[in-house]
Image 1: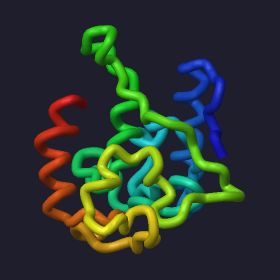
Image 2: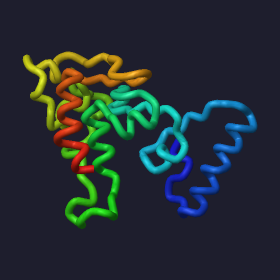
Image 3: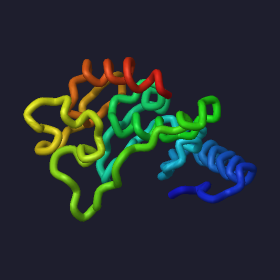
Image 4: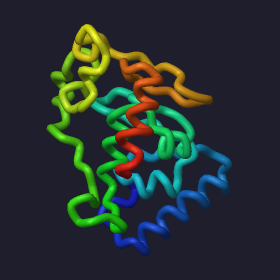
Length: 162
């Protein structure tokens, strides 16, 4: 859990190298729990994105980073600092506060913070918990928006800002 939190960048790189070396030496998988997307990008082959203790997206790291299909994943990617942007555009925070894990909202746990919660009809995001559905090869997302809606929003609204 958070193997590189609060470490100097040089020490962080050494720890990541050590984790990779141990993985190769023992021929094993490594599960890393972290909020540091830089560590994830450096280390992970496959990702599981969680929100409120629930899996909202799962897939190969490259797919999740470059073709994300859940609004929370979009928010995570937007919240990564960018030095190549103007100061006001360096990061896009996820609005609102994380949910109480002892009192999760009904429906999609992300719905109170999701800017797209009203896209699906019939208030389904607030009443029905979404199931993981396949959105690509070995890539799943738990969202009530249709695949077409998510692809359009990603392509037209989200990706150009990242």
